[in-house]
Image 1 (cartoon, one colour):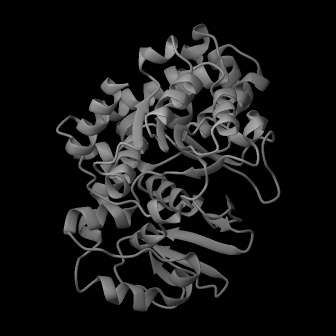
Image 2 (image 1 turned 30 degrees about the vertical axis):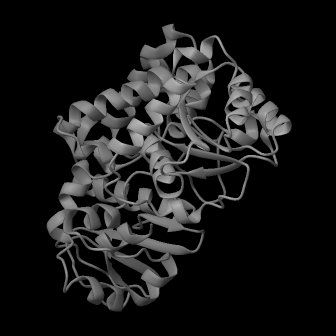
Length: 392
């Protein structure tokens, strides 16, 4: 146990959280069992450590443990929690919970046996707590930690502390919002760098970002998808090839028959793999209004723009990148469907949006919001694209 306390103290001393995530204030920390889900690389471990730094510094009642530690192959989480409580423990921060067998059963056992214990656990975005772990229904409160928004990236790079805005605020008050930001910084001066490498916090590390992201993407497929979905290793190459083909094809409706032929599997298996890639936050499935999985999506897009530049950089299309950015920014709190003719998206089944690149001729319609690339200040229903990076 002392070895875990030493690791915990080391991490608290040496972990520097460059950006305090808004999720820290959105979580109801009074709950006894809290799940932090998120794609690999978005900073879940740092988030746990920041929580301990803020509330439990020099306090042995809180302990961080990573279940990737081989120690947990010989000792159950329940037995560990029991010993922790005997030593005065009250809050257990559990990283990579899915690395142990029957993890949901062990969490439930701890919850039932130790009412004085609070547990905060992290897991991959592939985990589906409600659908696949019914024993945690009603007791585990799940939250999602996303990659950096453009606002968070801009705050980090400029030292500002800009707040986020709701979609309604941006649609109705974008000119006034922009005028509070533009005197302090030129967002477009930072926007392209964010699109290329700003979503994942590890761009701060002194390593090649693209190589680091490619390793992370492979780990998402090799570890997260295979372990959580219990897929045999021999099928990994098919999943990787499918992701590559979807990326190369660009945002469009998938030809499931051709994809099945290309990776030598059935149409049903292709659709399952597509769902796994979406759960892993490698792609987004955009449907026509009213449709949902298991129907074929109207369009498949990569999950965020950083992936576009890393998977197939020789074929980067500006319009695809801009649509990927907008869809990903909206996805957190809104429904994003394929738009009608001449439109990019239909948001929340009522808001029509069209992204306009520089030089686009606009046939003005009062029912459409025109999302303007490279425009720093909008007017009426023409809104700068960068401002949607302030949605969270």
